[in-house]
Length: 377
Ligand code: SF4
Image 1: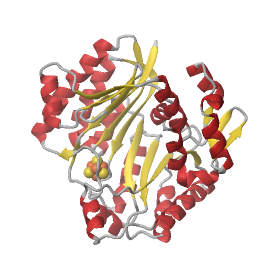
Image 2 (image 1 turned 30 degrees about the vertical axis):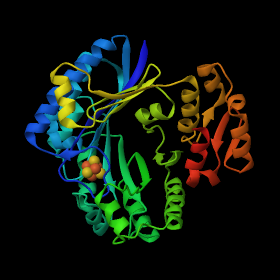
Image 3 (image 1 turned 180 degrees about the vertical axis):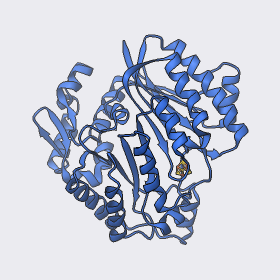
């Protein structure tokens, strides 16, 4: 039986953060109800098409999934288990924002088989939280962690952001210190991207906000690697750090080129050699499903060349790199032959190295990994 991961996009937030480029709408009860009904239809339609498929991970992201409340989240979680064959021990993650949850909500999630939480901490600095438009205060993260632990969650991720305008290295170090003191099982640290079509992008274009200098951002990234390693977190993917045995299994599936189904507005899928995304427009997403039609908006069949390139640039995100044996088993061709010239060039630049069966990024390449990825596109 084939296995897949399922991503569910919950497209609501209480307010929009200034840097946010994700598809999310301001939460309204009527829109959420219409969305949940549409999502239920989407789950049923896909389950009929994927009868011979088992689900090994589920990730509910957003948006702010907890906006729809425990009862709202219970519905898709139950529907997925009812209509799909979810494997015993499957990893089931829900993203939660500090300040939007209660013990009651987390108890519902536990009861529905959720076994991993991803908490949007971002920073421990109150001023930066307000600058970013996040709806929580620093103390809410500790309260969320306490509630998570007391309701039985033993796998909790904290999401952090660095390179925020106005943030310096010592401010970032304080955030790392606060985060580690909360003893999460996993940490993700992403640099802030300033997207042009956001309020932050407009402010940066107008010169009223000065982006964090690249050199400072690089120092923050390197500091995170060093600091988290010193506190027992293994750096296993460019932006991800884990305690032993707590890697994100769902995200690993993306990095290893395994198939996944995306449900909800703007969700992306990769199945049977095709990539597609759902319509991002909430109304059109719901209308399609009210007419029993899948809300697929863009479908791109991938050639074998596309899939091999993806296997390289996604696989190289993992610190362990790409297994040449696994690549050959998947494609019947050797990565070292197909990409011989590119690999030689990157090795000569000190960005890639061969270690036993694996091709992996060097430490020098980590902060400029996009240069390596672009070489394979
Ligand atoms: S909580 Fe996340 S999805 Fe919602 S507005 Fe902020 S960054 Fe965007």
